[in-house]
Length: 464
Image (cartoon, rainbow, N blue to C red; front, side):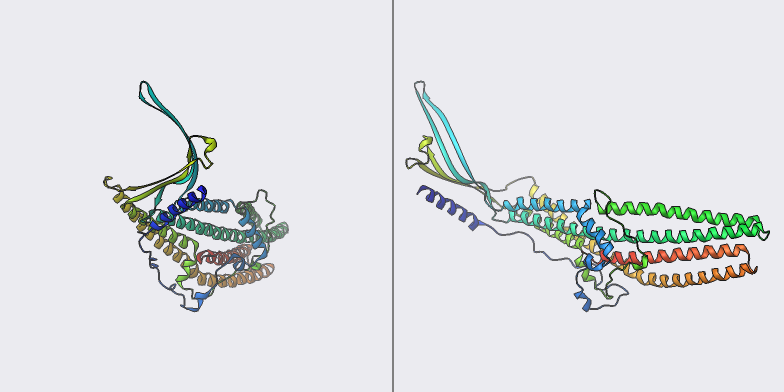
């Protein structure tokens, strides 16, 4: 019977708490307009491309060997693991802040023994046992201060979650970039090896001609120099190959380097692409922009908490339970019950301008987050423009490099035939060989640049 009475009193107290809560002083949120053009300069505008599906790494990087590397990195990379743990940290912080919006109900068991002296001949001793449940110093959120703090913590958590997504996009981009570098270096090594073999054959041929009295010692020395130059280039590419492998394994994050780095011709690597005419509104898909907006919303909520500090705060303490001087009779019918209801109104009167300064601080931070949000959009717009504006130039240069490579190879074959006929000098042969090597190396570099441009577009447009 007493238990039901206690529960009824407790329920009434909790109902009163929720009846008093709560209004909000958080300013209405408006997303700041994007400080960038609606369309990218030089790109055709089209409303149809607003329906472009999100760029997932699985669809944008269809190469199976590259996908295996990305999957390993997503499982083991330490930066990404740290980002996930930051999410757990922010989630726990939000959980703590959210719990402050609800009253904490706790049980208590107490024992009191006291002695009161009335005179030298009179004294009164008493002992008392109490057991009960109650709410201690709960803030009734009349003006939404606690709710605002909880909302700010939620937005902080969402911002951290978006930052994790941004780190994943950066990781995928870096893996793809390093893989492109790896294939390019292997192609350069293959080219250097072929050139080295050709130079050695030329040296042997020149040596035979010198022995026959047809060439001079200067021609032999020049041929030897060509061999050593290519040998040095080959060693340089080997060094870069090892550093690129190490960079890739660091990104993969495996405890042991057991993942095989599959090598294939650079031309065999296929990457995704996006249609022309992308509107700048698609930038809102980027995780870093969404994170910046959540930070702005958190700062907006903190203004509400700072405003609420100017108003009275109602704190509530309640307790209901049983009391008896005999512990053995505490839970029997002979025991007594008690209840306590202690609301406290705390009114700010004079605090040397602290509340005003806190409000100014919250508003200043909100203005900072607005600027940060706008700067993040501008930075994203610039990154997309860098990719799009260089794409056409890269394609034109690639075509020109291919034609130049074909022309230089034809010229080399012609020089070789004329050299056999004695119509050109050996120096002309060396010049033709150097030109072919340069043309082939530059053709590989422009192919590498084109692939890196495609990889960068994935991150710039908010790949996930």
